[in-house]
Image (tube, rainbow over all chains, first blue to last red; front, side, top):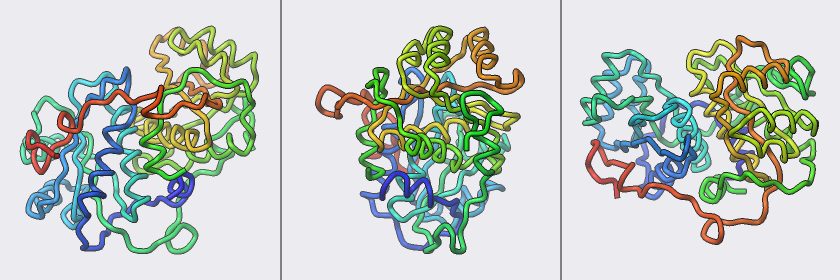
Length: 173
Length: 173
């Protein structure tokens, strides 16, 4: 899928078809994360790819904001090890995975894991060192056929509220 | 350009051809930012698009880590207004812009602006409210023809260092 088409049509997906995600598709999602840019190219990240249904169910049971992980055929945990700007680097890798997955017919939904107890429990479950910062567990699965403009749509602020020309406050469009 | 191709070939670019960036290309870059996902869909961002060469030169003169902004035909400043997780949201919008730009034949390089004085000066220059968090000014311009595997290459950790299967420490590949 073309980059702009992926950006334009991508939606958050919390319901997945039961089909397994083929290894070569998971490989491309992980590769999209690995190849992301990061601050000073430190690549301070680890990606734990989970396809075991018992583990996925446990993650869904722990994560109060991510119950749907339990119904996904795969997930990728993103953990940062001593990054300067962990959220910024993670955000760039996450977005590359989101677009890669979307272009393959899959979907995902960011799960924040901001509850400290839940976050620690998932780290323990996945064997991630306690001192790492677990940013999210992104579920991945094939999506129902939903397109922007039909049932699915993006709810975004208009350009006039977020874009400016030359100086803040000067309308872009 | 196909999503995986953009992810696979994208490189950081600090030298730009002098050609102006057409409005419709800038529009797609800004749209890629506007359409990015964010925590609780708060979209807590502002994008200031700069094409005025005097302003670009001033930014390059202020930003000690981003002198090359002065030689770019365009730039987008990313400022966050009261975000829960400004770096995470910004990272996702930034990465959509990077991939969009790359797919159009352009390049960019993240400029950190972590020096508080420089950061404040650029906010003042662009009229961005002082209480906003200025994350970066991304320069954009057409790139020289450099491809991964030729002169250009990505310097990334091998998959074995960053990817794990089912549990941290279990090799992915």
